[in-house]
Length: 101
Image 1 (cartoon, rainbow, N blue to C red):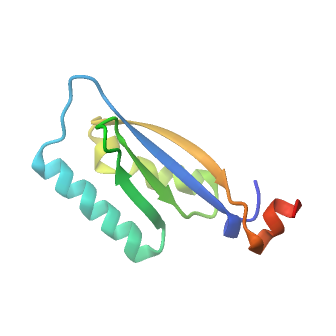
Image 2: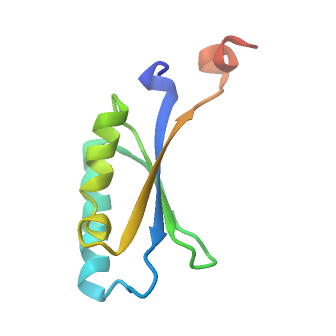
């Protein structure tokens, strides 16, 4: 993979049919997000407006670290969401648009 300064990990949280997160699970998920933010590992997080799940963009040194972070989400641990982890290589001035600028 590329330089971790220009890599993010996208955790797509897909709903599990027939399961709904209750208030305690939602609060645990938010506490998890806050802990990631405090550690500097959270870039952004949001649910999709259409109710089709959510996305958490993580900062990590490796895909293995990002996967461990994502799997520690209470939504994943409780089986309320299915995880799909994607590697996102950033194109920006800082890396000369991935060396192609």
